[in-house]
Amino acid sequence: MKSFFSMFGKSAKELTNPVNLVKVGILIGISMVLEMFSINLVVVKINFAFLAVAVIGMLFGPTVGFAAGLICDVVGFIASPGGATFIPIYTLVAGLQGLVYGIVLYSKNDGQWAASDDADERRTVKGFDVSLFIRAVIARLIDVVVINLVINTTLNLHFGYIHADSLSAALVARVAKNVIELAADIPLLFALLPAALIAHKKTGGLKKKSAA
Image 1 (cartoon, rainbow, N blue to C red):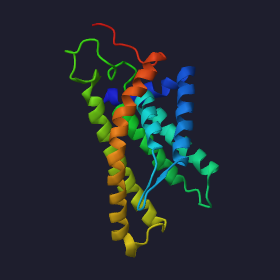
Image 2 (cartoon, rainbow, N blue to C red):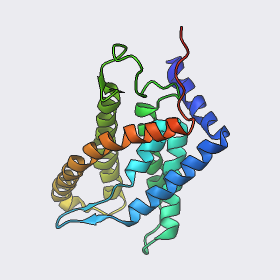
Image 3 (cartoon, one colour):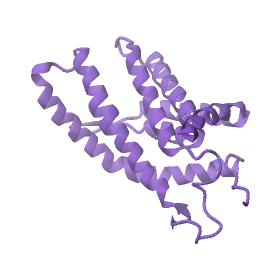
Image 4 (cartoon, rainbow, N blue to C red):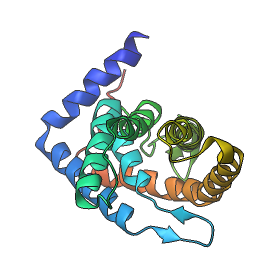
């Protein structure tokens, strides 16, 4: 339990490194661009802005992930309000998304997700700890089921974006949308997260554990 709470302090300290601060800023910008270029299918609108937030959470932890989620939502609203009313609780939910990815994926900068020099040290897929991929699935499922389907649906109902008499139809549509998104989201996470770790490591972000 102590190590769980200490993770938040370690995450906050990530931004004391100017290089990390620049990386987070770039990833937030990428998230904004991805948000703008959504894919409109016949029944659903899909965007991949969460990918940048997931990378931030993985590399810099839950504290930075939460802050990045808040910033992305506020900046996104300012850049493209679309006549909508700003509701702070939705911003908190956006922060919660980054928090989830940070808690589940944070590498603590110790190289635990990095390619192993000794293949016998851990079960790997192409040199990466398989738990990275398992945790990626868990994080995305929490995001989709808890945040998108439960929290956001409840808020939409409360604020009148979903009417009570059409709740069943809305739930069916939202479940279908998120299932379709998951089919694309999981492979993208599997491809992107290891690539992000490699790039982070090459720029001094990941350090090997010292020998015992």
